[in-house]
Structures are given as structure tokens and as C-alpha cells.
Image (cartoon, rainbow, N blue to C red; front, side):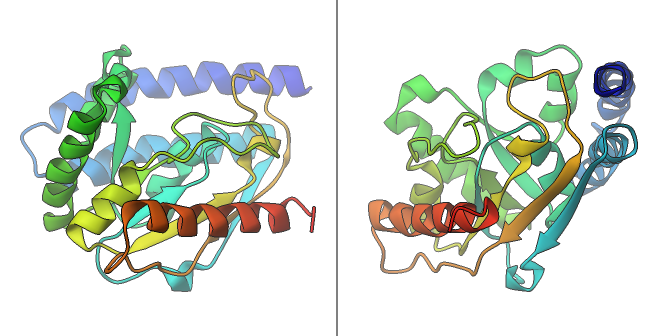
Length: 237
């Protein structure tokens, strides 16, 4: 049954992606916020399908920690689930993504209409300058900026290398940082066709203020909170 449910989910997700990619193109004349509210209907649909078909439920703790002002969200990266769910669970966010994602047929069309910050990771310092310049613009528009500091998905129990981009943006703009931990990889493993039923816990941490901190020091604070919370969520403590 898990195979059948996962297969049906994959088919319906693909159909939804094609449909919303076309819808996304028609949102081009509208404001960034209107485009965002329209396109994330795809996210809502996929998260609902994952629950209805695959039994992937979720709960969110720490919502009271979200600041009123736009923030830099730095989240654990285990799965595709969080990239889909976070935009509907948090205030409007511009995602920092690798630019190659915009080249993916249909999916990339919709992503482009969400005003992401699409970087070439190989450009190093130039990519950091782009994150600051475009991140400052998104924050001024009332969008938060969401980044996965590990850069790529890691398996449950693993810790990836935390890149400096999110901390660099926060320290150069003064935006508050919100760390996010979750255990989505237990239900929706990276590079896995099978989706396992279960409960995902998404934990939003206390705001970390960037003022007066060097990027490296801020990054270490974010990493410490996320990985400590991951230990708690996974029941290792």
C-alpha cells in the first residue's frame, strides 16, 4: 500500500505542478505578494495530498517566536517536505535557491514567479553579495528570506556543513534570525520515492538578534540551536 500511495501521490503532484506552472505565468502582471499568495496554493495542495494519501501529518511548535518584522529564516534541510511546507506555515518568504532550479520545466516557472534569490554557489563571494543585495530588497518589500544553511538535504541524524549565506545577510541588514528544526526526513526521505506515514514536528526557535555579531558567530549560534533541537526531536537526548 505504501508503494501504491506513493505512486499516486507522485502522479498527482506532477499534474498539480504542471497546472500551477501555467497559472503562475498568468500572475506575472500582479504584485509580488499577489503572485505569492496564488502560487503557494500549489504548496497547500501538495502538503494536503501528502497527508491524505501518504499519512504524513505535521505539527508546529514555537509559532509565538515569530517576530512581527520580516526575518531571515534558517532551517534544517532533510527533505523536500520543508521546502514545500514552510512557505505555507510561515509568513511570506523569498527562498535562497541554487539557480539551476529555475531551469527545471514547469517547477522552475512557478519558482521564478515567487521572486527567489537564485544564486550560483560556485561564485563564492559574488553569491554572498547577491544574497545581501537581493535579500535587502526582499526584506524591504515585506518578505522574509528563507535559506537552508546546509545547502543540500542530509539524512536524519546527520549534520551538514552550515554555509555562511544566511548569517551574512542577517549581519549586513540587521534582520533578526529565526532558526527552524524538524524531522521531515523520517517521513519523506531525501531522494526517496516512498513516503512513510508519520508525524513531522516543526520547531521554530527563539529569535537570534544579529546586531553586534560576526557572521561566523551568528552561524554557530544558529547551528547550535538547530542541532540541539534536532537531538530533542529525534529522542536521542
